[in-house]
Length: 473
Image 1 (cartoon, rainbow, N blue to C red):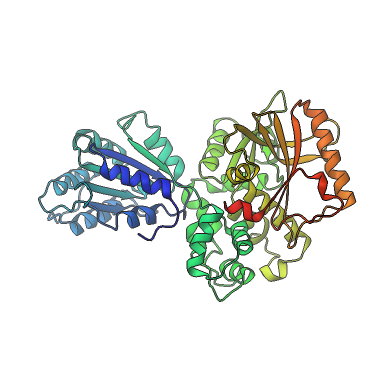
Image 2 (image 1 turned 120 degrees about the horizontal axis):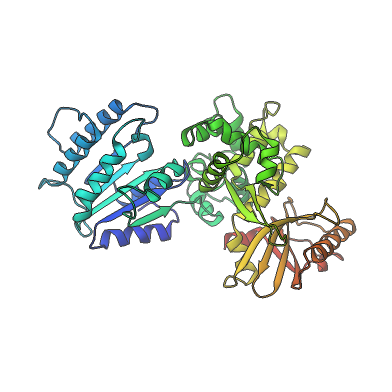
């Protein structure tokens, strides 16, 4: 089995195979995260039936494709189904044949319907037919495993997981597939890039995130900078249009979502709902709520609260490295080469922001390095609203054991050096936070740096130091 990481997901799939009841598994997550690969690799393509939706086609074409899959798995009916109810009726007939393929483990009949949202075309009877298939047939068969999958996360959640009709409370298992962690990225990259260092893994993650599809495209002959150029900036770069395709395949009216992302990119620390309304042409109300929820479900943004404020409304912040890379760099027409971009002020600004996102996606590793894995915490960013509006803290770890870690995140090519000026800035920042938040907890200054902290006459101001190596633990 050639699967990197995904230990809990593999355990869930194994549990489903060994279950003695009908199972309905929903797999979802953003485009390119490896959903289809995981399912097909785990089951080694040994399905009783497998079909996938086709993008941007009408119901008639979807049914033709489904019919082709039925014939591949043994259906002898030559006529294309007239509607989805008939198509699922054919599937039931196929599953009842003596020759239907069964999984070696538990002799289960495994059905995999991939890219389900594409099958649900306008004015089709697809969802009704799926409801009927599960409720009138599959749910009564103890050896049936139905797996549905889709990248359009909001469609999966709204129409399957939160369905109030025939599929209400029918899903037996769910699997939200997240991007790889740094350690999983390292494990995957070692196969294609022998000898890769942890620093290089960090650089790749800062640019592309933990998306397996992107990580699999790197060439061992090239440096990090060359790979970025060849994948994003060259004339025939395979990921040149990936950003726009990503949003178009996930959302209707994708321009509204990219407008929100563009607005959020203006503030690294994030923006409140009202700030977003003030900065974009998107109206408030339920439509904005829906778009923000969908962006969060795709893990493009995160939502957090500043718990030091009495009115601690939600703040929304970009946490997807590939989204940040495109909005800050690749979409800028004046930047034609990554190697030319390196060393510019804009490059250092992007790099600092990208490292902050990397850290935010590895809070569990930070807590492990601090020795507080078992301590309940709240994580948020903070900015002064009274004393000094220039003061902001990108990460606060507010702990249940009456300690607050004020975290500074710094990327540098060598060990990070705290000079006298920065020492005064850190002391001022902690003092403003302590005074303005009114906290009675102990405040611990924590420096998270890519390549460690230089030990000089000023480094003692930091109570906890965490380097890039710790993020792989």
